Length: 258
Ligand SMILES: Nc1ncnc2c1ncn2[C@@H]1O[C@H](COP(=O)(O)OP(=O)(O)OP(=O)(O)O)[C@@H](O)[C@H]1O
Image (cartoon, rainbow, N blue to C red; front, top):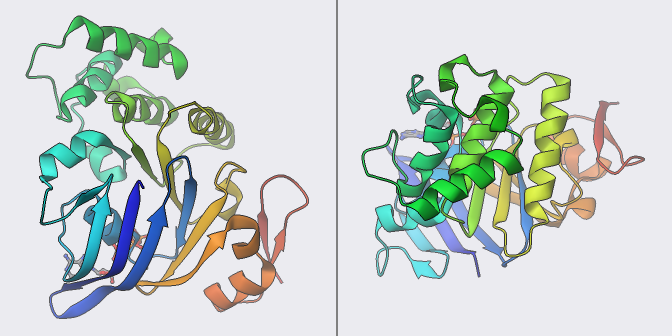
């Protein structure tokens, strides 16, 4: 099992930010995590990466239980994450290639000498993610779409079992967004590739590959299960407390206000 949360709660400064979260992710499953602003998505992701320790409940990530056999650093080597916090920390003068390579050490910047195997892997990722043409350009000169590809490459360097993509399309235009989603779909179909958690506010970004969805509301699981059973007009109207209509006529859902 990639992830096993049992009755997990988190209290910060006297407030419950997460309450009684049960969530299991099996190997090979890809999930969408949907929640409005302030739902607790970031807090939940911080917990999966062992930056937060649960106040109550049990967290197991990649078969390791928090508090027992887990060291934050070791765990983070096995999880790939792309988030806006990470994006802000990358050194703008590093080349795209160096940024990807730094993923081998889960570090910001390169302080250790990469092995030949690491260099080959980074070059393969540059090709797979169509980043080869700007491999040697400083990260800060890349477009937002190009930067996101590089960060996904960095997250894949260690062949993680879990890949967390936290709103990866923020700031992308329509074309760049669709291209990035296509790359994510390709990653999800790789044999022995990582399980993906795709965090978003945007229903239309739920690709067919995300067959499971968790709806998070006010720190609690509102509902979870098969995406086509979760993303319905009735469920989402309850979830948003607003009458909405879901159009499933294409492969991806679209949301309309009623
Ligand atoms: N360290 C903290 N101390 C106190 N309150 C916190 C802390 N971290 C988060 N919160 C609160 O917990 C709630 C959930 O925050 P979180 O950032 O996880 O939401 P989110 O779903 O990621 O929202 P967004 O989509 O806006 O990023 C918010 O009300 C936030 O103010």
